[in-house]
Amino acid sequence: MARQVPIRALRPASLTCVAACFAVAGGGCDGGSSSPDDSIVCEAPRLPATKTVASDSVIAITGEHLETARMGWSLATSSPPSPTNELRSSLDLTGVDATDDVTVVAETRCGTTSRSYRVVDAFLPAATMPTSDAVALDDPRIAGWASEVESFDVGTDVVWPWSDPEQALGPAEGTSVDVTALGRGGALTLRFDPPLSDGPGPDFAVFENGFMATYLELAFVEVSSDGVRFARFDGSYLGLEPVDPYGLHDPELIDGLAGKYEQGFGTPFDLAVLDDATDLDVTNVRFVRIIDIVGDGSTLDGFGRPIYDPYPTVETAGFDLDGIARLGPAL
Image 1 (cartoon, rainbow, N blue to C red):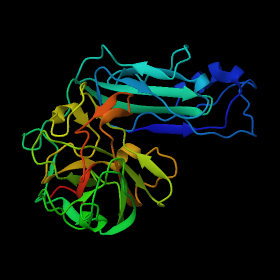
Image 2 (cartoon, rainbow, N blue to C red; image 1 turned 180 degrees about the horizontal axis):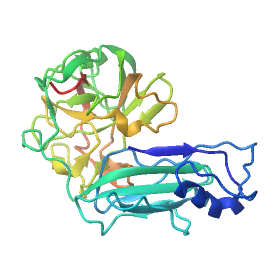
Image 3 (tube, rainbow, N blue to C red; image 1 turned 180 degrees about the vertical axis):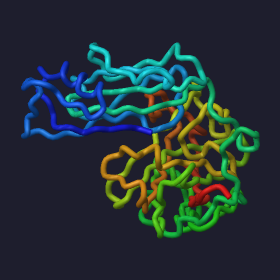
């Protein structure tokens, strides 16, 4: 879970005092050197929104005033980390042991953010494996389905009726048909009524129609409370080579992207990951947007790595959305 403390922007001369301020929870700066410039208000930096990272990941922050950024990390079992004195807006986790939990802290003149990650060498396996987190169609946690199309920006190289957005509504079929093909680079936004709300465990699952465990088309997932401002789950992709139109790749290379699992199994998403997102109320999420990833390597994951999936495809190009399920507590 992330901790984000936005503050009024401090003058550059106050950076040393900023570190001291956040070393103590709720602490303030002594003396007058840290007086805020009341004419400037900005948001604290943002760390990648995910629970799990690969052991060679470079954690980069986004936000304002990155020229003032500093970062640090520690094992989650150790004392909370403090930013180093070195100005930096990214942190290389190479050398961190897999299965370690780490806490990363990032600080700019706008505030400080921290987030904990599990470091792994590989992500969870295919849907039918015992340790997978895939959501089956008969999973008792499924409590409903998206039932309204909010908007559809259809991509290229897709023909009717594959591009019919109504096919993505209601329960997933778990077959290769009765889906909505987004088209190359397309984006489909569905509405939930009542809204999704963060609870224990994953809150919704996205179903695609990959016809086998290793034939997988991928998409980004974004959510919104108002239908205007969206927050994205940061995914990871570890594959190194392009994937041809009927090529295959290993689910263990994929995390945080829709389409990780074959037809009949959904990829789960936990709204708690986005608890620090600006303008998002994780207890009132009405919209889920699925954005096709153009799989030629031109699109990057949340850590700057190229993403590959079957490319190029025609007539049914892009992510094939079968449905989005609301998840309740485990029974």
